[in-house]
Structure formats: structure tokens, C-alpha cells
Image (cartoon, rainbow, N blue to C red; front, side, top):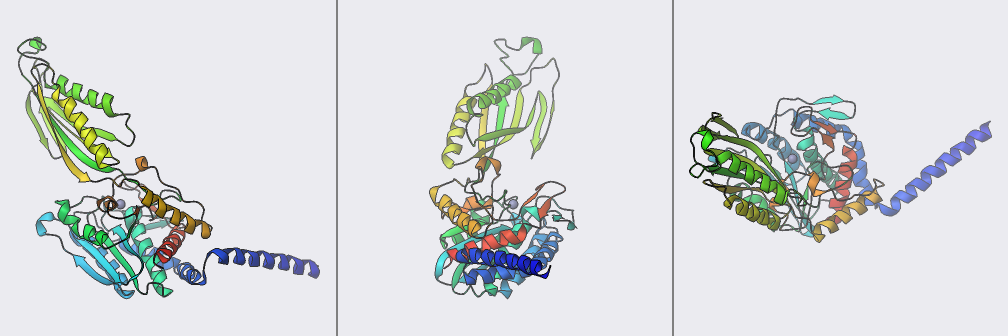
Length: 427
Ligand SMILES: [Zn+2]
């Protein structure tokens, strides 16, 4: 009986021993110190997440956004970063950004991105098993905390010494302040002082993002003749504004709906013969069934994977708009929003480095997220300046919607992955 127990114990010990050897071949002793810190601080990670989720910070609540920023600023001050709050002009109605910087010379110079603002507000932090509910928990306060704790772990292991790392948490990712030359000027300047850009927006599965589509908007205005409906299609009445607007939309669809990574969504369509008004994203119109409509306003978006794709789509749309039905006219105007993060070989190289880290840690393969599955993001303002990778943040669901949540269980794993990647890039 006793002999059996001893034999079982030997087998268990041998298994543990073999495990340790296998692990240590790929993970250096310094890296192991970083991982140990993360294992020892899980509950601190969750309580900081609770603290920042419980500060309401929709983009327009500038005081709330700044309060989140001050919470994070204290954390960065404590691990030796030089921190600054970058104010935006009052008329922009944006909180500004938090910048934290280490000014060493060793290894790659990194720019790490997060954002403090949320789209919605009102749901407090609530833990339910391995899920943390609350506005902004997934997008992207868990990512903000992952970024911070990766650096805290490096700091604890003495691995931040002499590194060059800039951290920027923007206060208006969800609705960038205008003009973007001003609201993203500091980010562009930081990218120009960096070799690589890592962004901690939400993770999709075990994967990361080498490309994100850009977004922009358009307004189509159509005019026509008006009068008795019995005379529509006639020599002096023509087709009317609503038929012309429908022709244009239908031809947009026919010409462009199959193009990979390109989407365009007419979101609001107002037309009639009087009081045709559009105010922001809402509209009103009146029309009688016996009157030909003479005015239409349509608004929509346009998403694209590169500047070339955006410009070529706009050119096709302009061409379609110009071929008017009888006695109608139309004009379209475009407004730039967020540029595209266009996938390139340098981004894929960075992805392979992350994949190596993940496999060394025993966390499995990391692949590229399909750019069609992601919206636009801040990283696209700088991804043309340096190799870039996004989606290093937390896992979760219901972003920009009620019931938003972050997955707590995967946070330590994601912090480890980020920390070891940053460690290796800065050696
Ligand atoms: Zn986000």
C-alpha cells in the first residue's frame, strides 16, 4: 500500500519536473520573473479594472475621461514613467490624452496605445463568475489595464531599465475630436519617435489584428421638378428626385457591393416635396401621393482597407451620381473619418513575433484577424508610420451595447503574452 503511494508520488514529481524543463527551455529566467509577478497580482488587475469601469467616461463627459486618465497616470508615475496630460482646445469639447514615457535607448522604441473613453455609459462594474460586466469593460478598459500590468510586471522584474516606451491613452477614440490633425497630432509625433506600434483594443479569440478598415461618411443630395404626379415622366416633369436617388443607390449597390473589404451603408434617406430637412443624423419630410417629390437627402458611411480603395470607390460613386435621370440633378460630398490600417508585411512580421511568444508560453497559435471583422480604430492614424499590431487587449462581448462584458479569466494570460512580447522587443 505504502509502496504504491510512493510510486504514484514519484510519477507525479517526474511529470512536474519534465513540465518545468520543457517550459524553461523557451522562457528565460528573467521572463519567468515577469510571469511570476502577473500570477501574484491577478486580484489587483481585477480591482483596478473595477475602479476604472466605475468611473463613467463616455467621450463627451470630459471630466469623467480625465478622471480615468488621472487614475492611470498615478500608476505610471509609480513605475518611473514621465507622465503628461495633453489638453485639447476648449472648442473641441474633448478631454485630451494621457502620455507616459520612458526615455531609454535599448531595443526597439515602442508606442503603446489605449483609449479611456466609452460610447455608452450607465452600467457599473458587476462580477459574475469569470465575467466582468460594465460600460467600457471590454472596449477597452480591460485592454488599458492589460497594457499597464504588462509594464508593471516588467518594472517589477527590472526589465524596463533603459527602454524607450511611449504609452498614449486617448480620450476620444470613439468620436475623435475635429480637426483630427490636432486631436491626433501628438499621436503622430509619438509614432515618429517610435519603431513599432502596439494597440490594446479587444482581442478576437487568440488572434491579433494586422489590418483594420477605415471609415468615412457621405451625403447625397438630389433635386428634381415638382408638380402634379400625373405628369411624372413627362417632358417638363422628368423622373422626380426619389426615382433619381433610388437609381443612384441601386447603381452603388450593383457596382460596388461585391468588392472585398469595401462596404457602404446608406443610413438615413429623406425625400419629398416640402420640408425636406436633415439635422445631424435625423431627418423629416412631407410628400403627397399626388405630388412629384423634388428633394432627397441621404447620408451613409463608406469603409475601406486602403486609401486607394477609398479613392477608387469615391470615383465610381461620383460617376454614378453624374448620370442623372431626366430633369434631375445630384451631388455627393465625402467626409474623411478614420483612415484604414492597411495590412502589410511588416505588420505580419510583428504578428509572427507575437505568435512565437504565445507558443513559447504554451498559449497556442496567434493568427491574423480578418480585417472585415473589425471596425476602425485609433492605430490607423499612425500605422502608415511604423509596423503595427492591434487587438492585444481583453476578450469580451457586447461592445458599444448594453450588457458589455470583459472576460476576467483570460486577462492574466493576455498580460503575460503582452509583457513577454514587449520584453523581447526591447532587448
Ligand atoms: Zn475601442
